[in-house]
Each structure stands twice: as structure tokens, then as C-alpha cells.
Length: 512
Image 1 (cartoon, one colour):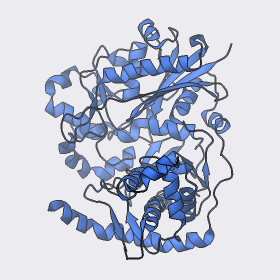
Image 2: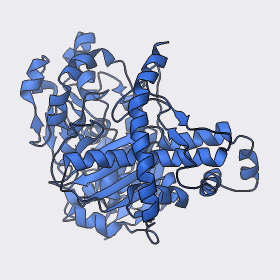
Image 3: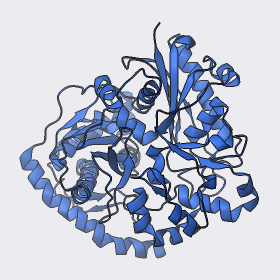
Image 4: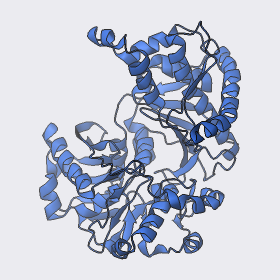
């Protein structure tokens, strides 16, 4: 009998389901866009029923895409958004909407948490932001009647898994890869920080039990089997966070390996062999890896790829129609433009934080071109945009050297649209002084979850070995040019100074 596993990724923009055989070959996939609700400025929520329905529909569609037999599916696992919270009552119904990580209505509860920010960072791995802690306090203090009905706070993937398995509120779980976002966890010890909880008038009564990603939390109910097209009794693994699934699915399973998710956001991750936190710069969050004993330090530029889209639409609006008419990819054309000017873009430097800086957090910061002269044109500007992401990544590496002094960065593995651009890969390789490789597949979140599902039922013995076996580098890695690496060092130092020096200016601008 053929054996298959299903990985389901509940992302911010949509739900994706992938069905894989025991050799990692994709048998069928499906995607459905999320329904995001914006009741007020800064408020972002989803209906838990919508999320659950998207899982039902994408499983059915993925099965139908290649006529996969439901009887061949031996297990499923779900990963999902990490920073927001769902709630369940005693019967595993949802007393609240999904409170997205994008939602800022809990902002009033951040100042007091930030007073304990260093303690929270050192224990959980992440400074307080719009994540679990302030959201829990929001529901407790703003809606006591709703609070009385909440049995546990869970994440979207766990919420859906519990619905599929017919769990009760007392069965609520969270796998350890989410702990850095919880505010109230002792992440290294894999337990709740009861002293910190007590200081904020909380306890573990409404918190889920902490489990391993591959723990089987239940099996598919008759109703869920009918909704998804799968077989009743199919085992369901606890799953993991979406970033953890991506890191595993990309084969980033050894200390020193760097993962560049070059999409709308530019996400930098590096694998650590111990739990260590960025207390100096507070740019990196430290997250548990799916592989036991490993962690990954992560930071990101929220608009990394979005900046290129902005440049394409706002600055190259005259060229874009012709590019598209000729069948040329606009991003390839931007890469070609970038290659026509020298490294450093003739001393033009770009600040990429058009919507504020995220890691470390500075909501007042904005974007800027520094050093403009009459000789600069669009080619210089697009190269400066690309180089700014490399400078940010180099700053993240500076933080890594402080939190893990003995760690040696080995190479960069890239995914996403930015990783398809050879000029962009070369720029990052040159700035970081590291080889940059691209993987031979496009989907990693569902693959990571599928590996977890297979581990849960004994199909895969070792998740790290399985991930290594399933992914390959496409072509030869892009090698750094050592002369350019040395040249970029001066620009990177200037970039770091520019970030610090401009903070006061942007603070004044925000106050106008």
C-alpha cells in the first residue's frame, strides 16, 4: 500500500495543503485565501470557522488534484500563524474571533509588559509585542464575561486540529515551537513561567499543555472525515508554528545554517545549538526548532520584497506596461537594472523600513534614500533597495556573534521570489561573505508539517535526516566576491550608523 502524509499550513494570507509520499514527492496541493476582517484601523481578525472551513476545502481539493486515495493517508499535521491567539471553551467552541498577530488592540497592555521586557526576553526568547501575552491580558481585563467562558488560549493550527479530532477544552495543547511568542514561557525548560504569570494576575488554568510537535493529539472524527474526504480515525499530530515548519521543510537543520525567506517580508533565520537571547540589540527572537536541542534566531524586514513591488509600481510605472507586454518579468528587469551600477550604488544607501522597523521594533521609522545626487537614476535606486536587505542581515549576524560567540555561519539557503533573482542572491552573498544557495522546490511549510506527521506515526524516524533527504540545492550556490565583501563592510557600517542617527529625526516627524 502507498503511504502518504498531509501537511497543512494556516498562513496569514491563506491556507495551503500539501500531500506528500514517503519520499517527499508532492502528490497534490491546494490553496485558499484567508478572509481577513478589519473592524477598525489597526484591528485584524479572522473567524475561526472560516479557518476551519479552509482546511476542509483544501484537503478535499488536494486529494482531488492527483486522485490521491484517502486510504493512503496515514497522518496529518498542521502548522500556522504563531503570534496570534484563538480561544476554546469547554466544548472546543470559539468564544472569540482569532486575534491576529497583526491586530494591535491589545497595545494598552504592552507598556507594563515592556517594563519586564528583558526578563521576558531572557526567559521566552522574544520581547513583548502584539503576541500572546498582551492579547491574553486584553481579553481578561476588557471582556470579563467572555473571559469566564474561555477554557484555553490556543493557536489557529491547534484550534483546527482540535476540531478535527473532536477534543474538549481540557485537552488544549500548544507545541513547544510557539513558546517564544507566548510571553509567559520558560522556553528553554519547556514550561510555563508561573512566577511571571502570577505577577500579572494569571495562572496556568487557561493555558494549554505543552507538547512535542509529533505527539498524536487525536484522530479524525466521523464528521471531520466527511468534511475533508479523509478516513475516520486518521491520526492527527500536534504540528508546529509556520516558521518552524518552513525551517524544517527547507532542510535548515544544522547549527550555523542561515535561512532567507525572501518574500513580501525578508525573514532571516540562523540555527543555534543552544538557547541564547539577543539582550544587546534585541533584534533577534530565539525560537525552538522542531529538531530537539536546536533553536533558530529570527529577525525580519516587514517590507523587504514589498519595497521592490513599491518601486516597480511607483517609480517604474512607465516601464512596467512595456515589460509585461513583452512577456518580461518586472522583477527580472529590476535585477538587470541593479547589475548596471557598481556595488554600493555610487554611495546611495536606502533605508527599507517604509512601514516602521520590526526587529528591533521602532514604529516611528520610515524609508529614505540617503546620498542622492544628480548622477543617480533608477538603477542606482533599485540596487540600493536590494543592498539594504543585505545590510540588515549583516546587522543580524552581528547580533548572532554576541549571543552565540562560537557559532560559525556556514551558508545561506534562500526561498521565495527574491531567491529566484541571481542579482539579489549575489548582492546578499557579497555583503554577508557567504555562499547563497537556492532550493529545488517552492513549498516548505506544508513539507515541514508533513515530516512532522510522518514522525508521529513512525513513517520517519528522524525529522532532521528526513528533511536533509527531501531537499536539494538547485544548481551551484552563488559564491561571494571577497573584494566586494570588503567594500560592503564600509557601507554596512554607514548603514548601521544611519539607523541610529535617524531615530530621533523620525521620532520628531511622527510627532508633527
